[in-house]
Image 1 (cartoon, chains in turn purple, brown):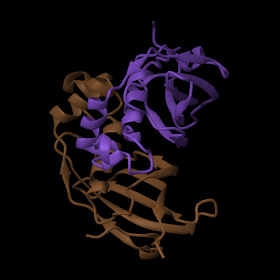
Image 2: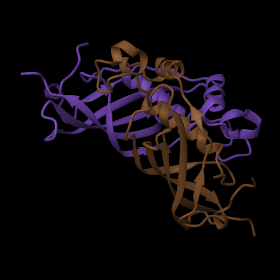
Image 3: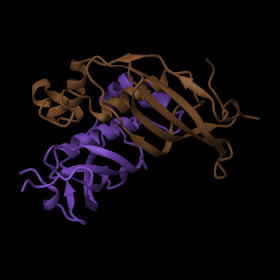
Image 4: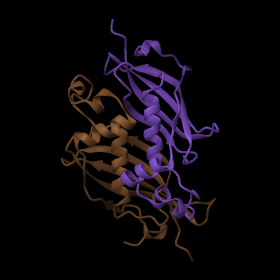
Length: 149
Length: 149
């Protein structure tokens, strides 16, 4: 798949990803390094906390989403580079054994006055589990280069 | 340090963290797993991209921030659990050898009508490098339990 320029994108386009499974060991290992709280680290302790069972750190969900996005059909020339986020939330926890995939929809596009060779695309990326439940919703403003003349 | 309830927090309070250093191998290893783009993976290739040198994935910066936050003086009873974000951006890239620390400031607090045992604290967490430059700004609404009667 060739890289996409701003001129190759259109509002309403949807890009899909492959699938990525996450198991309990990966959830605990990520948490031990980056988010060492009992509900992300220990199956038994997690029963007594808000998620009532082991759940992935939200930052793990975000990192897995990025992996899926980088390998998805959405390939801006110059890479995936965020200028900021309009919305970012985790509506449901990710559990051991969940298999994630995502859909990215182009919501808006505009050229950048300050950088004539670049534009911004507002993209809503929704990460789903295998039951189709959204586990993360992220609306990002991404830099996308304009096609060279 | 004992865990904090909503009644222990006040607008304007600032919590500080320890320090955490990130090296080139950690940057590349995180990127290989979660954000495999050339500017996060390869010193030489990175020279030709927007950061003009190796830079950590923003999601790595976010994950390192979470680690610092969990180990900081800010210890809500029940853990650090986000209800959503009002602001989230990466004003400067994190480079190999950077040493990060953070400051978290309580911006607002309110009880939750739907859950009388819980409140929300709006907290701005700014992650700084060793030169005092902000590398991440995150304004999060966090659940904080009310002190049991």
